[in-house]
Length: 270
Image 1 (cartoon, one colour):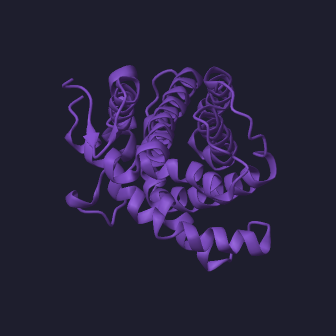
Image 2 (cartoon, helix red, strand yellow):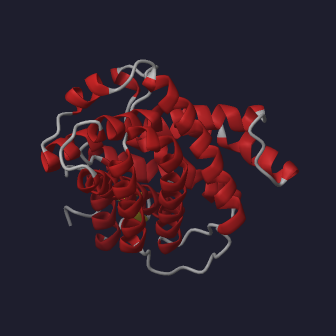
């Protein structure tokens, strides 16, 4: 029984152990930059050189605004708690269309396209959370969906020892309760609320890294609208993988506890 883990009287079933292994494989996914470079042959470094001066700051502001819009959209629309299979392909088709439009219009269209694609990605992430048995009508789950965007990149404030799935989760876990408390009292998203600003900033600092990589790839003139569509496809697929791994782990934690799941995850080879 070498593939079954024990803690006291509790043990991982073979099926759950495989689910955890698959979750780790997803969360250790190659970065978006690496996948774009491998698929389209467009070096991110070349794209970064083409971006206008000060573009990183503009991307950061647009990213945080998009996350606020996405959270507002989530609170308004994610009330269906009944588990069902996620519709990954439907959401991919939508962002492929918006990516094609952005690719044809140029990188400046990103400021318009980013809030839309972020909302679609958040809807897809929630769809995956629901398929894993989580109640997406709960604020904690909605903020957990938003937190998936932090799994895609590294904050400029991080050092090499401060990266990884569990470290990112721990950082966000300190900010979520205050944000939940604010939303429970107010019942709406207010961009000036300090609790939300802290949470969105923590997520945005990582998400904007991935968004910048996406914009940089689009700045390389490969195939115009076709490359924009392809990059958006990879962008959506990346966060669907993050979401599937994350919410599978949360499902397993409900059954086995965080300590057992984290310990097994860290020791597990993939």
